[in-house]
Length: 227
Image (cartoon, rainbow, N blue to C red; front, side):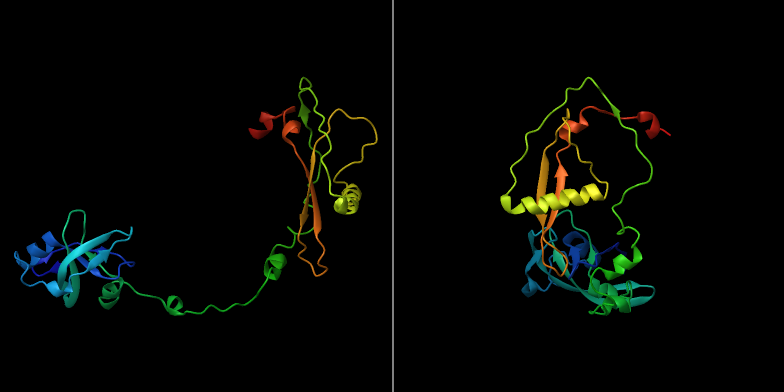
């Protein structure tokens, strides 16, 4: 971009609210070494993107040309190192350097569907069933690991009936298997009450176990990972 008879590279910053011109660039393109052409009454503080404040030397009316067209713009002249000439969003729009699409100008968005129904319709196969995969997986166990028996955790009396119903439901769906004999491994269970998303307004029970000790005797089959 030409500024007077000099070519100056401006940084196009759509987030900038004003044009910026370093003091040394201003002096080079205007020849105003003593800043007599600056509007000193326009002195103010420039707030940078990082929140720092930088006083400006003043405001300058300058002419820039691009593609054989000349534009008059106002720039804040700032003293110090590390600054680049910057064009603001408004100036770039006036110079046709950028365009805003009609969709971006529309302040309102049409809501075609609400709630979770669209997702449930599109991915209904994901939300059906329990997520149980076909086939069986063979687990290799390191027999040298000593079994661990956890003591039962306390359960609030008010939740005991719901927990028993949930356990029976998990047995019916073949998620867990009832054990009626002594076993070497006993894991701690964790019961959580979740707010219901349905219309009945009843809380739902979620049951899981602490797998930390159960993970110790498991051996990873790395050959299957490399296939």
